[in-house]
Image 1 (tube, rainbow, N blue to C red):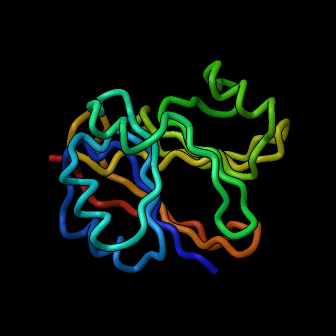
Image 2: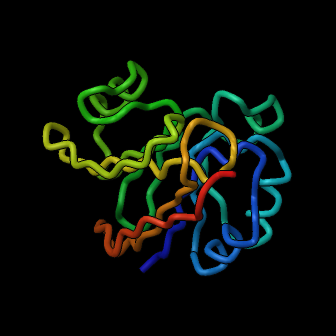
Length: 165
């Protein structure tokens, strides 16, 4: 059993509430737009960090994180792309990655829109944790957490961190 904290679009912002949830996880997954190395360093001090770079991330962050991250957590195959779209509206890069080999879990960020959708065509779960930072058009800062057990995703929770102001 692996406890995951899933976040995206921090845009250089991190606070004690995010860090407290990070401490409760076994792994932290960040789906891009970290915004600064300070966010990465704070999260890496707490737990192992997996992620992808986002469109606002600088060359240093892009050197540390890939554009496409495909990995296993226990027996669950995960695909993470910052600008990836969602079922029925995948970006060309996501469509290519999924058509070559569909994962069980596809994660994207970028839109600042919290989503959890099942893609029946590709037999995968799509998650977008929304945005945990204060930049962007979203009104409420959000993250997700869940448990991976074997190849199953369990106990999915939406975490509302409050208004972005």
